[in-house]
Length: 430
Image (tube, rainbow, N blue to C red; front, side, top):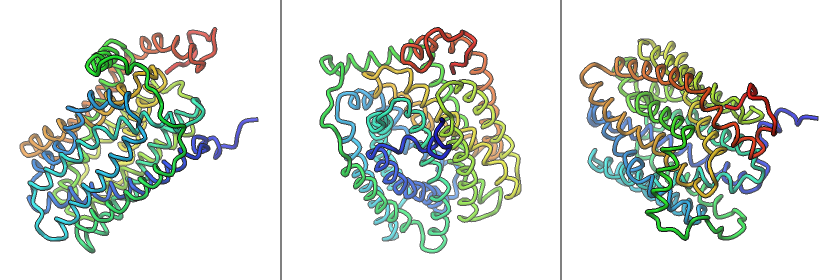
């Protein structure tokens, strides 16, 4: 008898450690999104420049592109739980520094840029460690796709709540209190990590080789293994061409829709609603099978929603279109994560998830910087529109590659029991 739908949707929450992680991160991520909207609004209020919005986004994420390959090696060598405790504590201090400077009324764009770089360095280690740590908290490997989807729903749920709270706090008290709320929210995730009951230090395979050899092995694995390389290339394209719409959102809210911080909060929330729906769809799926087609469709959907949003001049229409874009983006990124985690060798997990972080977060700063420059020349709306078209093209390219990818992944899934032995070649794989 199949489990009740609600139980199936939340099955990854059965282990105590994952429940602690989920609850602590849920609180902290709300604070993170409050800080994101406050930082964007503060920079735009101080400068009125779409270019500087792009530069701030670049500074916050470029360290991931540079450092992720090296951090992935460390994640495969070190204790992932301890890495996360350290990165969360450092993130709390970064938010506290923003709060003190903003509340004192002395914060400058230069200081914001320096602190964004600091947070980017922290994230370069935190993101692959957090992604690779999931499998240590989930006791049943078949629950891993559900755990990844629940992670995504946690992130997107915070995207709905955080920007709304952030818009209210900015309007009522100013950006400084947004940063302070974020700093306090890190207490929840640090407490949840410290409360976990773990089986002690785990020995990582391959530690006998040098760090440079492990780095080279990770690069070769990702570059030569076609399924991993293909999904990462598509993710990099979407992050570079599509994601900058988030950085340009304050310019849309103010310059196109003629609104204020509340309008920005509504737009971010609308995108988050769609992303949450996409994450819940993935959480309700019974298995990883068929996610390749979902990636192709979701990428094209994200591009269409983004292009249509770029043409909107009214708030109500923008609020209708953004959930389409948000849902497509979430399904594409979370499905990519799931496929990578189910095909990768365990000893390479940290390194592969570091390349995932590079494709997801590391390429975004390049897109943000380019989008800021392009928007200053051809306008915010046309910049977002072109990014949407690029995502549609990327989804079409991936759909053409699917038959080859399915043939390569099939034996891996049979070996790991995801597909039963003797399964027909026509059965869905990804």
